[in-house]
Image: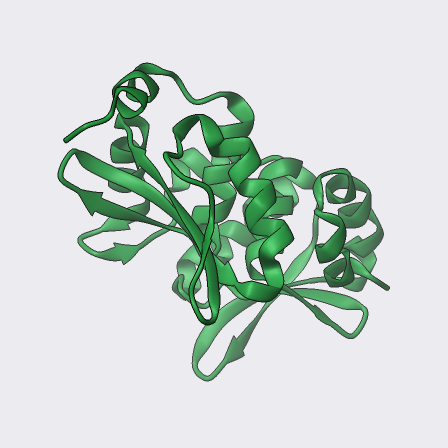
Length: 195
């Protein structure tokens, strides 16, 4: 049975920060799950990333029935289903495979979305940052590479990992990247950007 909270929340529009958080997360580890009323947004990270999950929850709590929970190895929460998530599902998925929604990313990419994507999928690699974008194919990664440069002035290269492609931010762009995203990075995730 649908709660009053869910019914009211479904009528609310996502604020810009909430929408951007979901876009950045969908570029990374998050996903949209089928429910009886459409799609819900699920956040699921390792227990060591509790602060990050709590940060996401704080931003999205207008659409969440219950606070994050632990399993043995994960810390997670799920939103209610919402019409905006149905639209994002259509853009981010082809059948059941996640894809890059080119028009959306080209239009919306900004420093906040990039910060969320880094917190989800970034990892320090020497003096560079690797973005583990292997779930996307070569053409999609090339497109993302172009958007990062066009929208944020971030230069990156493409490299292969076990036959799949991923992005690596170039040394020359690391200072610029840090300046753009550090204001949005959860303190416990700053290690991903250390020189």
